[in-house]
Length: 394
Image (cartoon, rainbow, N blue to C red; front, side):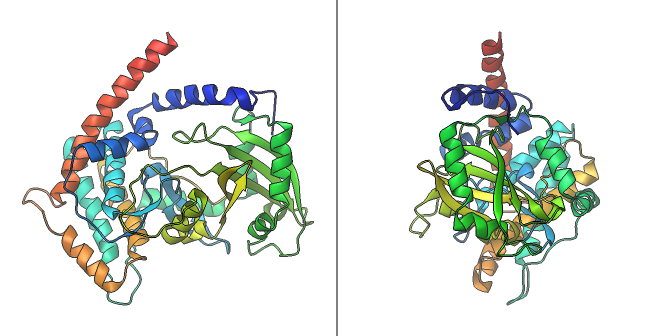
């Protein structure tokens, strides 16, 4: 998993440069890597947003942070899959962030502006559908469109060999670690919390031995580049079947969230605890497979990567696909929020969302205005980022 590569002292500068490169690849990549600026723009614009019920929100709810996720029993569903920014906050923020991501994906697919407007309509309709359950019932889930169903079928067919081919082939994303880092990782992997995590899957036993096979610094992500990130390979038990015994652990530093928390709410003081608790509320499949800990004096969270875990990678969309995907993903987020609300809170939030509709657009005016303004801001920010990046490269 390792090769000669930058040591800990050289990582920060190289990772910053790599993040700048990734954000310059496309306008949508820039959106993914600029979460902090998203909330700065949202705050500076002084938008009058509805104040929804105080629930756990993703905080960075873009398309690539959603996809099929497996639970400990092997069941797979499409859920939110990234929680670095999760807080107890205003659910409207997740809708705006997802709307911006969908709008930028539409522009990347050369779809006309009218389709973007219709995508926002479908986004809110899918979200509202989740809230419309009868009292005492679970949120109403929407049927998967064909493009999402294809990703689900692929996820369900995947085995360990597919995960290994996807994550481990080549070594450019794995950098060598220091002796101190290896020693600290060995101590962490021998802890009771990690043993409980890796033996929690239904096909493993609580008494299985856990052996560390290898570890590396993992160059992964975009906005999180520069934070601690490690990949660790473990063997669990004595089975010779890699689908049962091999285990890839993702360890990630838990940093302060940029997303604003609601006032006067109780949240975990530690960032790792915040992330795991938010994940459990929003994405039960993934939350039950996460643990928080400390590593070399910093808060981290861990999860075992499973072959069925995939992110949505929407590069080109037809007009009909774009609207179907927008409605479905809006519903996924709506279900994640609605699970945390009682019947009265759902009814009040649904009533609020149905306000401020115009005759020409079946989406709240605050959502449409926010997405339009943020698309303009992000496209300008992206071009300016590329200008600075090109100047540095030259």
